[in-house]
Image (cartoon, rainbow, N blue to C red; front, side):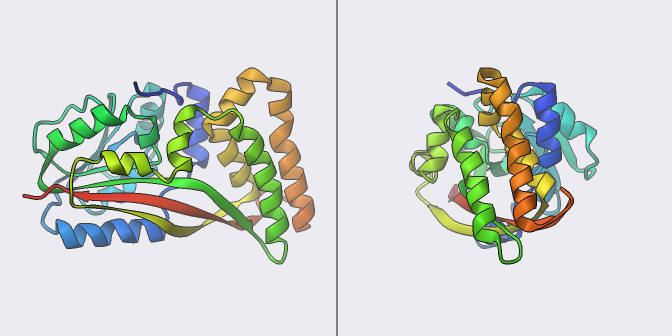
Amino acid sequence: MAAQMFEGTQHAAVYQKYRFAPGKELKDIILAYLRDKAPSCTELAVDVGCGSGQGTAFLAEHFTKVVGTDISHAQIQEAKAAPGPPNVSYLVCPAEELPFEDASVDLLASFTAAHWFDIGKFMSEAKRVLRAGGCVAISTYTTDMSLHYGDCSEKLTQIFRQAWDQLLKYSHSRVKHVLEDYKEIFEALPFPDKKRITNIYDKIPMTVAGVVGYLESASPYQVFMKNDPEAAKTLLPEMEKRLLETMGAPSRDTPLEFWVRHVCILGHKQA
């Protein structure tokens, strides 16, 4: 059974504001794979579990038509409200029931969402909708994250990890797929021509406010808020205060770098 964790309108708004798009290294790896395996399959890309569209816009530069799908009405409303390319559209639907004809999709992609799907049913849909010669790109960022600013990067990362580790106590059981680098999802992909890359590192420009907002957008924080609202309300302001003090910075808009490791599963449905 699929899990639904991003339904609320307030959560969707935070998600849209603070979730970052796929970084350069991840995008380059996906594009290089597509050039190698399916250089002429550029008609239709589908971004499954698109959230508020962070990865969908990237695909729009490389396909004639891109459709983002998500089970959350609130997330799709945020995606539709944001400025975007004219060749992108959005639909509300489950990942396990995609409204596309058999053998009609050139690229089936998912960015940091596949662990919420019913994996068996989603893979059956992937096999059905993907055209012969088409590709799959399923990625996630991991919990291997660090903050970088001047000569205090190690201390900043320690502060961030302390907050993140507290949130992980409230994580859904599906997060195990992320912690295991999508191993089970890779094994379930029904195409022999496939590979899993686990050492993709991106450096995301961010601010202190962005780091705080990212944690606020995470599903464990929303569970934490429901279970212990008083403690949850103090966790992120306290982390922000400690970060700024360590940096010697007066403003939450102070820029820093957010380093993150991605995992990416790539597959090719052979003709």
